[in-house]
Length: 633
Image 1 (cartoon, one colour):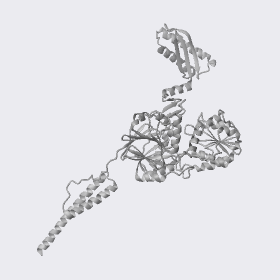
Image 2 (cartoon, rainbow, N blue to C red):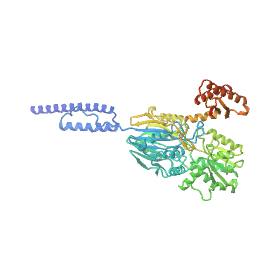
Image 3 (cartoon, one colour):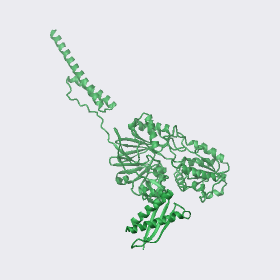
């Protein structure tokens, strides 16, 4: 009995000892788990780690009564860091237009859009502004493809200039590819690049990255956003978008897909910032249809002329529908307008009765009340059809009191003055002009603040990069993200040329690439730079003085001249005294050089230029460009 009691006591003592050891092990494991959690183990793995290891330890103790060896390995489930990727902005930041972005992972590069921009008032004589392709040319073998979000010029306008330097496959929706194909044909580049048609919901693989196309609403059909996925994570780029529940054509934006991608995890969101300063929601395109019907009725028996963007196919379809209801014929004016209509009809993006669309040559065969003329020129472009009508330069159309004109567009920032000049000129001709600030004849294709918040809320990005806008738009969009709870350290407001590195634990600028604007002037590309533009501005502001003289080749004394020619500086016949004084100064300059035996042409020209500069500045407080021309005999 005593032995049994002794055995029981011993057993109890052993159990207590084992229990004590178990408690020690559990305490050590708890401490280890706390350290492991501090080593960035995620919550899900942490719970599984704790549950599995605690049960395993208890089971082993129950079976073997042994202590696990030390040290205990704490980093079994430590998260392995994902690689980073680079985003390179060659345009589209701190400006409207010239959108082009590169996504780089390892040896692969995917390009997104390749657009042009309007020249501003300082770019005298420039036809088009395109991106700098230097970085692309030096990395051409790594580029797996160019993805286009939609067919607007600020997203496809520079593609022909790109393809003249590198040949890469291009991916876009049906209408986008159709418009791009026509553009390449104009530049005699048909067949240079492979054009691939893709559809919303489709995913393509480009090297180590995949690109999913997501349907969005915009002012042109077939617009898409993209989700670019690499081993570094998923970057969502909205493209140009708005949330329109009742679009004029096609379904509303695929918000469900944005939400699904957000649930899977979005590394970074890049979103359209054009309307980031506008509160509320962008008005639905259906509202324009109501306005058009009212205005068509108001026009009565007058001819209706509507200026809009050639690419706004949905708007043009609404005009055709209203014209059909009012039993009017529709004609089109402007080369880009005619091209867009032809492509859209061919691809069935525009539906119209066979007899409703007529050639502009036939409008004189119908009364004013039977015609609607749809034209380019909503931005006041000097060579556009509406501009030529306003200044009586159009060869086929003259406008006057019998015309009811609707400008169905909002001026792009910087174009307000040119648009105003066209409207003023049309009114002087007696036309009644309806424009956006008076009636609801235009809605934007870009999201306002509440729509931007919805996209942020659905995608739940780790990082945010506002794109597509001037600095004020990007900054306002960044504030919206902060107001939704995103830390400012996770938001990047960049500039064209920035190279950004993004990963699970980092978003930082790591470099800069050439991203200065390249100017297209006539058939010249890049041959006009800042120095030429500076000279053009100088000539435009102060004019030109040309000094022509003939010198003896032996001693450089004047044989003939100097003659003074003024262009854009003063009217010579009314400034004879100043011209005579300038001629006298030029003679003295040449004689001074001759006396000092300074007989090289460069020195003589510099002396003439400097002395005349002082004269003209003192007399007029203006600084014309002075061009000495010296000849020897």
